[in-house]
Structure formats: C-alpha cells, structure tokens
Length: 214
Image (tube, rainbow, N blue to C red; front, side):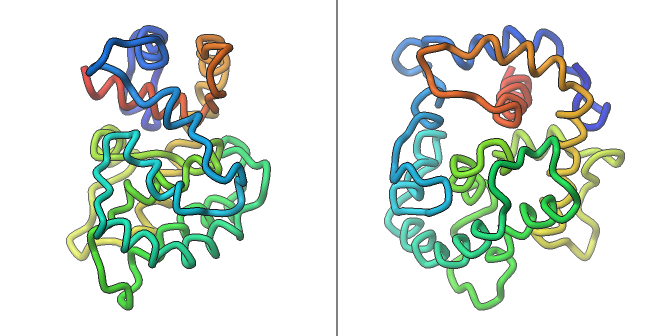
C-alpha cells in the first residue's frame, strides 16, 4: 500500500490493523475499542466536557490546566464544528469542506487565545470522534510520516498557520483514501463485529501510526 501521496510504502497493513484492533494484554493495549466506542453525550454535533477528556484514551495527558484551556476553546471549536456538513466522508469532500476541516484549527492561530498548552494533535483527538469519517487524527508520528516535498512539505522559514498545515494534510489523506479505496474496504472486514465501527479515515490513521511505531 502506497501512502503519503506515493512517497511511503506500507507492507502488510492487514497485520498492523489486526494487531491494533485485536485483544491485548494489560499494559499493551491500544486505544480501540475504548476511544472509538466512548459514549459522552451521544451527539455528533455538540461538544461536551466528556469529549475533552477522550484524548486520555489515546495516551494524551489532560490535566486541570489543559482542561481549562480546552473548556475556554470549546465555543470556538463548536462554531467551527457547526459549519461542517453532516454525513460527509473525507474521501468525497469537496474543496470547500476540506477548507472547513482545516479551519477547525483556527483557534490555535488566534492571537487573543492566551493559553498555549494545547496543540493541534490534541484538538484532533477531541474532534475526530464527532466526525470520524471527516476529521483526521494526527500526532508526531503521523506528521513525520506525511512530511515530504511531494506530500506535506516542511514548514517554510517564515512558518505557516495551523489552517495552512491542516489544509495540506487533509488533502494528502484524501488522496491516500482514494488511491487505496479497495484496500481499505478489505481492511474493514477486520473490524470486530462486537466493537465500534471504524471509518476508512480512522483505518488510515491506524495503518500510518502502527507502521511508524514498528
């Protein structure tokens, strides 16, 4: 499977997915099914305080100060979330929708936001569960995986905004989903019938993250 717009090749994605989704012993467990199946308010359109704690299941420490920052950012995140069209998957999103996904990260570029202890990866872990087929997860492993001159180029000398970075990343991920659509359909068969569903976008994250962890 070629990913990152053809700049990376992943071998045996099936084994990576099976390892992530399958049962594990104490101390070796991954986030599935707990993060993906976490029930907060059951509303894909409305953020609540429970959503702000969901990143803990992906290994992110959300202490009181970070919770304070996330709570303060929630109205801004909610307004951006409200603009996303319902029922749209990243693979089919048009340019307007891709720009709306990138705009979810505008609060991190807002000079009026005083606390800076929240990064884009944490915002992604909060918002992904609300739109798991449209809003991607990412962290340092995913960022490094996609960094390439022909995919998501390194940041220029004068920097770039979170919106600019996410605009590049979501388009690269959309390309990967389209080019590997049949493969992701096959991987979907590995999702346990007793567990929460896994979207192609979440599956892409699993493959990228697991291939970067080995």
